[in-house]
Length: 109
Image (cartoon, rainbow, N blue to C red; front, side, top):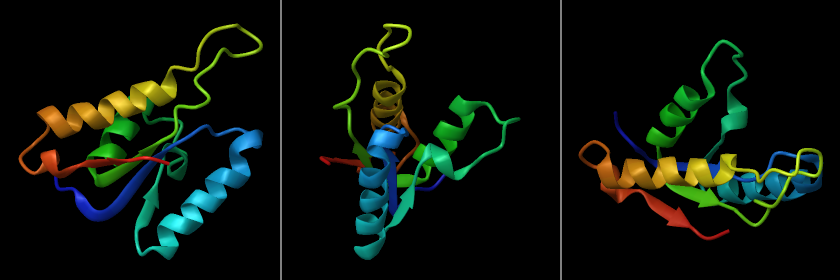
């Protein structure tokens, strides 16, 4: 697997309240000459979500991870663990991935 030098994995909340920020972030990434990637880009219900994340994260050199909304879900009173999990997968790929994966970079939002 190779990592694209211009691909940026965007790991942010995908809800209505964050939608405008997500759109602005994607715009800024593209305006700077990079390719924005996220779990939203593939909508194949037959694909296992973790496999999709492994594939996309594996192809990205950069990652933007906003964990500011990892609080409790209002309905179930459980924390949102998907975003910290995606950061963990990104960091795991950097540390233990294939040769060249160590060049992955986490950017602050």
